Image 1 (cartoon, rainbow, N blue to C red):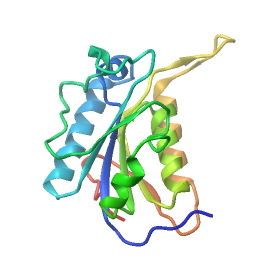
Image 2: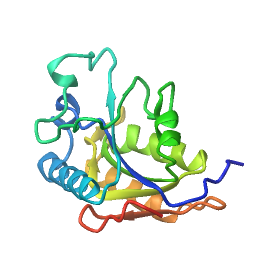
Image 3: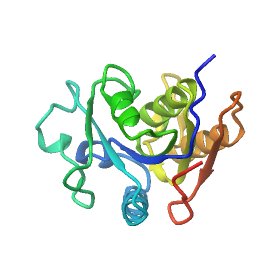
Length: 186
């Protein structure tokens, strides 16, 4: 069982809202606008914003595709986490950053819903953090399976929203909210 983290110190984690990722996700303009709104509201409330940025062979570090989408820019002093795996916790310093902030509650936004957002959400809960997913501030692209079946992006987004709403972990709280209604703490 995970160590349940006591307290209500919140953070907003923004995952992979990068040019090369956002260029292919469903309803990108609306989602980026909602991520930007969540960042604006978190900063206004004095809630730390942590920026997670992915790199791999398809998204090389320092390339134009790797850069943050122009609508979103980390502020001076906001932590930046480099990652190479789906979960923002895997082989990164995210847990150390969260510990330094005494964070117990993670509010999550970004891309891609079915990969990095899902993996980071589950990893947070498994590590004892409370979690809120911003339901209108994450997205992905549609997936075509080998048999020709297409899983539409909106369906993937809604699936994760429902999963986060109904998951149950002992001693932890998980929920979903909108960018406009996020409270950023437990």
